[in-house]
Amino acid sequence: MVRTQVYLTSDERAGLEFLAENKGIEVSELIRMAVSHLLEQSAPA
Image 1: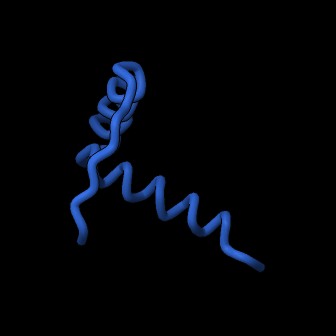
Image 2: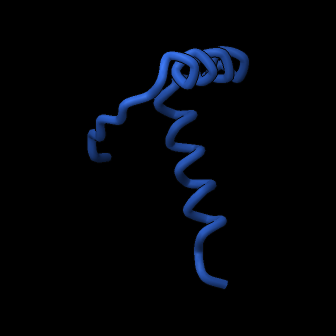
């Protein structure tokens, strides 16, 4: 893995923390899941 820094609004961070806590995962894992999903959806058919 490669370390990457991103800037989030307070609301974005709070929303991610809420979702991650409800799923029982770390915020970083939730972000990786979201990036993977975006890349899958953007892949050429």
